[in-house]
Length: 589
Image (tube, rainbow, N blue to C red):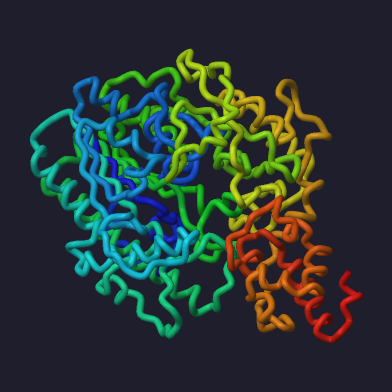
């Protein structure tokens, strides 16, 4: 028995031919769908990248207790359980988060592993030269990314190609061996959409704007041709991913592996390419483009090629599926189920990121629960491995830690409880949202339905109990820790106005008076007393810096793009600035 997991990052289901009518040229995904069971209702759980990989190891949700971080000492790890049972687990990957502070305990769970450098500003090649201003980590990443690209001038030298080369080498070496699991994990098509010209030629289009293959995590403010350019750059990279998939399928065909080899093709989450007026992920609600994922399963225990599966399934199901394939019993702490077993209806799927909306779907409806108040507290971290993505917890973060009571899954261990740091994109600004996918599959028209919301709250509370969520999550979300929810727990109607404000797109600057002021750094605007008075009256948090810190050089347009202020706020400020310039400041006080 052998198993192959081919995992992508940020692969959009709605841009793959087996799922949608799409411009993307991906014949190998079509070929895969003919050999596999294609899952139509497969959802993410814990988000984004490393929380999803923690689920792949542990088979359970983690976002209710912890932000991005390593595997914990009490975590079960599917690759490690295989290793202990005599199944060789091998990882090949170019995913750079594995060698950062928040990913350092994952790869060592495998029997053997190989890494390939150079993706997304990975601090790989050292080239000393003029750098970005201090305090600009994203600019530093962009510069490093340009350095890295210069060391990958051909497709053969691209880190994706080298990773697949290593996977094929493992297959060639071990094609006649038994009891192994190979995980080929590709960072693509994660941004930036770095791909060679051969694939770009598949998508000819006229574009004379700036280089744009790395959209920011914000609302769309770019012109239509630039948006389309980014979408086609992504499409080109997906075509390269399709080619890599084809290499694996070819090997399995040539070596007749289908009768005894499990194949899983999956991703961690999607990536918004202007859908809902947003780029990227994590700074907006977790729309289905981000969490309803492509998933393909070829399982010799249940050979049903070309079939489709509509039951709810999730990332937490991967670990128990692989373990049972090799005849191993999943640990009791795994919440997932074996996907090859007779379908047992999952009543609800839970998903979200730490400190964000907590979401639940029954397959038809999606309920996105925002915090009950704007402070988004209490929010706690529970960990024995205090690191973030690219940093250790600070002394201040750890100075007040307290021992927490054991959870059901910590194997009797008490964790460190520290105050969590809410993301800059506070979910309260988006409000609580409810969607009916049957009537609105694109999630463009959130609904208000008190009876349905109460039913979805019931599903959510049950899921929180099953995950042994901490009491602070119930308090943050305004939900009862015990008993059923009542009318007082409904939030959709109460938070409708703030949701509608955030729903509006950033207005076209050409439609606003004196747009040049909206492009100026906020600190420069505050130097003008009349404009500062308007900002203090309209956005008091912006002028009282003890309450909020924004990066130097940030403009009002950038704040609108990131959702820190609503489109209506931007329009109001533009009108006020115009009146100031016309010597009528009193109208805006």
